[in-house]
Length: 342
Image (cartoon, rainbow, N blue to C red; front, side, top):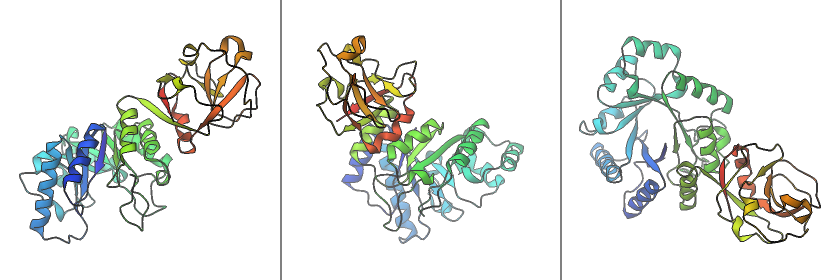
């Protein structure tokens, strides 16, 4: 499940409505907002902003999750609480959590949930269907979570029946002093889609864009992966011209995946022309190739290398997967669907 963030210091206007509409079309279904540590507006203005955000979210059938602390929770109008979810900051004890679950769904801080926490909630007969485990985002560079620790904690939380969540960066930053709002430090400097796919492969139930914006290009890429289950790969550095059928055709890796290359199952059925040897150069990681007529029955097979390979007179080099997309190749398993985009 996908979500995005919108903060109460942002303006709600026609551009906001267009963005919400586009994100809904791209497959996003939830919105996260957080109460500022220091409210610049009056309490009534804050409540009005929250009401406006709720109404806009409701218009596009987007569920709203509100991050609260023990002070700000009292600023949420009572009539809203049954219709939103609350992400609790530190300071709420198990008894308070139990009482809140009677009113709405609650997200706990995933990093600080312990076995003792779970035991205490169980002793209170808390309805675990009303609980989720949400991670923080980390604005300060070098403070994001470690991948191995996150994977282990995520697995444990899922094993005890909790829905898990994590943040990825968007395509802008919320503050010039910071760089992205990810949960994992490794995601701070890589593409949002790659970050999202990695969380998905780690069986994270909900992936939220932490920064307040995701551009239209990435909206399309997210839809391609999370709705169509297709990994998009951009191709660059073309040498001898890209066969027209290569671009945007739906391909699959073979069910018996090779060690050294991704083999495009559909490729040999798409070409009936004689392919002569040309551009038989060394193949670096991520090189896109096509077998020429020297390979007999393999002529026309298109491959993407997953390691550096030497030049082969039977293999023509077509181009290269874009550097920004090379990490995606490791997620193309047996039978995985993908498209090559120019």
